[in-house]
Length: 195
Image 1 (tube, one colour):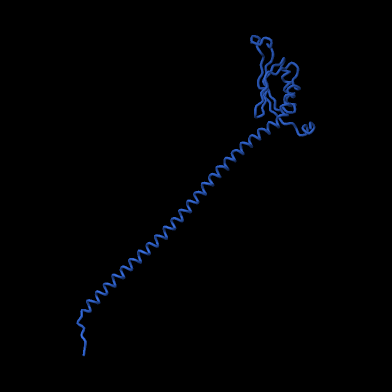
Image 2 (spheres, rainbow, N blue to C red):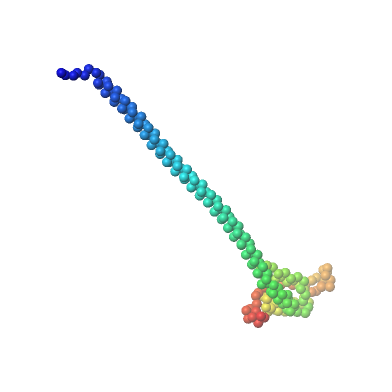
């Protein structure tokens, strides 16, 4: 005998397919959410790792900036100390020069000439003011200064005669002069002979 299936099999098959579709749809949604969460977690961990690296680098940069500032301060202090040492060395080396200059002022001064002011500047210029009985004595003094060891390039800047009506009645008729010269180091032969 033949069997006839009178049950609504098409309806059952449609319902089964619909259930399978819903199950597959839910599974796909769960997989998509899982993948999205995994990607988000990985990205978040990489961001945190990069932020930690950035924080470390910023700390190192701050330390290096402090070290650079310390180095710059030390360089500045070194430059100041070097400048002080150079000034001290210059003073130490010029100490004998001043003694020789004063000795030259005394030994080159002819009779009848008086010095009233001596000025020595840092750029090694000498300015002399004085009085003399005659212009010839001033000329002789210039020649002697130019032949001195530590003085050179002496030249007469100004001269004149004191008037008789001036406050200095005892000096009336004398020549007033002004001389400029330079400090010159002695020749090496002369320096060796002194030592």
